[in-house]
Structures are given as structure tokens and as C-alpha cells.
Image 1: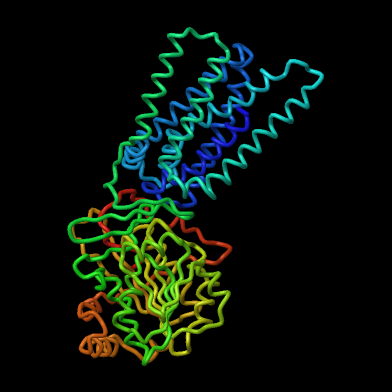
Image 2 (image 1 turned 120 degrees about the vertical axis):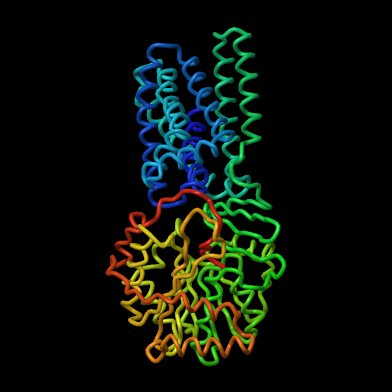
Length: 507
């Protein structure tokens, strides 16, 4: 039973660890590499230590000590984990080593202690060396079955049911409970020692259920199958935050208005298509674009594609988006949706990228070829790419433009600053227009078309001024992105703070 439980807890900690790190470090390949590497290193050391110490002390004492120590540390993760993560992020900005150090501090000790349980259990169980192989195989099988249960149970059920912080507290309670059971069963400790340990476990457990929060208290928070979803409010606005990135801002005084400047530029694409009939949005966010289109362009048939069902629900429950009959919301991956339909669109808006959350398969040559196949001959593609406007983010933008031009030779670019001037991060949204209508258009003709639609109250009046953000500087040659090669984690910025949402990545 103990081997089964410890195997489950180790893998549960690894899965839930990604949710603990995501609000601070993101959810990149580097974060997952750090988590897996730290867990494997800790397990290797734990196996060796558990075998060594179990040869020198009685088995029950070793098991009790390992489980109580790992359980106490897990309680500390739930209680103090967030302040530690922010301290590490402030001290180490490297996108590789920051997550490694954070994972080592938080998850290394319990993984080490839990891995030591298996050799200690084997040492305790093996009394007859004639059946050594049978005992060893059964113990390893039980531990592996526990790992499988912990992986599937955490990923498929527990994270979505009870949330990451509560789950960590429960994992600490399981370990501490098993440790106390082995301690009492061994009956080698004095009652005073046992009582002191019980009080200590209760104290740490209380802290785990009342964790210290560094982020502002949300209106609502949920761990979805894909990310941590938070809704935050201030006096004027409501925000949708996914992991560490802002994905929607709604002005509470006018929920339909497109508040963010980049979204006001994105809808300028409507002026480039005469009499559009059908549109496609990839990336739903808070539903701002779809909500505005329902009000301003009620005749437009619209498909909205969003991979996360929780985000779709948040748009309806917290951002006032009620899909009208001509809007069709699909809970699917964008590539899967494109592969499943033969529909063509007059307008396609791609708004699925944040600075720290890059669905790499939505930036490749193959993806843009799919978009080209689904775009009407005179249709327009509009792509939003959140950016800091410098460093690795510009390398990423060069790569996206280089890749997009394989299917769309004519690309017009806009560098749109966010509305918050006091943000500590230099941020901007890079908005790209592509499609055959641009072959006959200049910036002046685009501006004239936008002016006409603003006068007809079909576009936000701010769009006219924002056309001045048109980028005239040519893009440098970038890496060609394919399904086989997308080095995004080498091209991404490493700033780990949650500032103002200057460059929100979805509506």
C-alpha cells in the first residue's frame, strides 16, 4: 500500500508542479524540461539514499522519517511556494535555470524522500532471499501502478476537481499520515515525540490550507485541463489571465467596446474585404472580438475556435459574450478544426499567442498553408503576436513573418502599443495583415476604407489613428518554422513578472 501511494504522490507532484510554476515562469518547453529533470535527479538520489539508510536503521523508522520529512516539505510548498517562486524569478531571469532552481527548491526534497521509500520497503519486506526476485518485482510493479494512477488521476481528474494548491495540501496530508502510521506501528518512538510530531504536522497542514498569495486575489480561479484560469477585477476593468499572461480586458462601463488598441487594429481588416459573409476566429479569450462582431456586424456568419472549454465558459459567465445564432463556437484545437472543415472564409483572425504561451503548431509553414487553403481568394488574414518589442521577441517575430510569407507574400505589419503607459515591461502587439487584396492596396487606400467604415459606425473611431502604427522598417530574415523545427523556447523573452496587460494575447 505504501509503495503504491508513494509512486502516485511522486507523479502527482510532478504534474501539479507545472501548475505551480506556470503563473510565474510560464508553461514552456524549458519549464517542463526543468520539472522532469529535477524529479528524475531527485528520484535517483532518493533511491540511493533510501537503500543506504535502510541498511543502517530499522525499516519502520526509515519509512516514517522519509514520509514525514517529504510530507512536511509538501505542506511548505502549499503554504510558502508562491513567495519562493517569485523570489527565484526575480533573482534568476534565465528561462532555463530559473525554472530548474524553482523546481529543485519546491519539488526536489519530496521527490527525494518518496523515492527512498521503495528501497526501504524492499529491505523491510525481504526476509527470505529465496523469494528476493518475487518481492522486488511485486514492489516495483506496485510503485509503477501508483505512478500511473497518480499521473492519470492528477491530469484527468484531481487538478480540475480541487485545484493545484488544495491538491498539494492533500498530497502532503497523505505522506504525513503514512509517516505517522509507520511511526506508531514501529512503536520505537516515545509518546512525547509522537505527540510533538503530530502537532507539527497539524501546524504545517493548517498553513498549507491557508497559503500565502503573492498575486492579487481573483474573482474566480480554476485549473482547466490546459492552464490555470483566473478572473481579476479592478475599479474599471475585468481581466482574464491564463497562467501568467493576460488574455482579455473588458471595460466594465461598456462591455461590448474593444478596449485594447491591438483589437481595434485587428478589426480594421473588415475594411479590406467588400461585403464579407463569413469569418473565423482562432483563439477566443474573453470573447471580446466575437462579442463586438455580434453587435456591429450581426450579418457576419462566424466560427470561433478555442481549445480550452473553461475559457469558453469564462467568456460567457464573466465577459458577457452570448453567442447569437450566427456564431458557432467550437471547442477544438485550431489545426484539428482546419483539418476537419472544407469551409472558406472572407476573414480569418488568429489571436492565440501570448509572449509566454506559444502554440508552436500555429506558427509553422504547414499551418499558414492550411490558412491559405481556407481563405477565400479575396479574403484577409489578420494575425496578432504579443511581443515586448525587443530581444528574443523580435527574433520570434522575424521567424513568424519569414514563415508566413511562404503562403502570403504580401504582409503588412503594425506595431501597436498597449494602453497602460506605466507598465515596467516594454510591450507591444505586432498585428499582421495578409492576403491578395493587399496587392492592390496602399496604406492611404486602407486608411480611406477605414475612414468610410468609421463614419458608418462599423469600426471603432480609434482605428484611424492607430493606422499610424504601420511598420515601414523591413523585417530581418528569420528562422523558418516547420512542424519539425520550431525553436520558440530559444526565441522567447524571459521576463517573469505579471505587470499590466499592455500586450494581451487574445480578445
